[in-house]
Amino acid sequence: MIKVLIVDDQSLIREGLNMMLSLYSNISIVGEATSGKDAIEFLKEKEVDLILMDIRMPIMDGVEATKVIKEKYSQTKVLILTTFNEDEYIIQGLKNGADGYLLKDISSEELVKAIQTVYEGNILLQPDVAKKIVNSMEENATNKNIKRDSLKELTRREKEIALLIGEGKSNKEIAETLFITEGTVKNHITKILDKLDLRDRTQLALIINNK
Image (cartoon, rainbow, N blue to C red; front, side, top):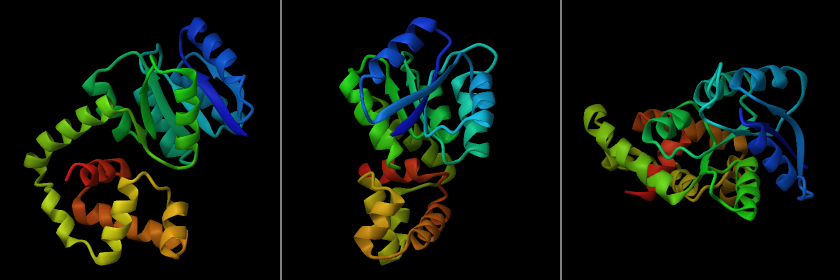
């Protein structure tokens, strides 16, 4: 059972998501919050597996809240769900550690599948969102000298792991595929990110898929 917290300042959206997701046996709605600040306070009291996070909210928006939550509750997944298809929010939200980004026009089946995917430790980005991020990364790459050719600096094992991350595999799935421990996978990922001067596995996955 995936424990989900719905964070949105609009009561109609919260109620709609609650009613829709309650129909699925693998999801349990453990609460609702109207701002990022309220979400953080909620996490102090109850265990949450995944947060459906809106972007534009009063007091503390979803981008800022994601940063705080990922720093304090790193195991809690954050799936950003918004109507705003704007580059600055997409990029900043993912930089702050969001595990996925979806637009609110998706169907209930797609949303449930997205929740399951992110809960399992995978990265989830809709194609149009991914395209925006890739374009932004390519623009920044020139300034930071982050080149796709730098993948050549990786060892054979590191390349194997990088490719599996590009496929959206979780650490557990990578470990099972390569017959190594999850701890070893984490160590390799740390080295990969350091060599490529990347912040997280989301950036790595996007480079792998667009090299």
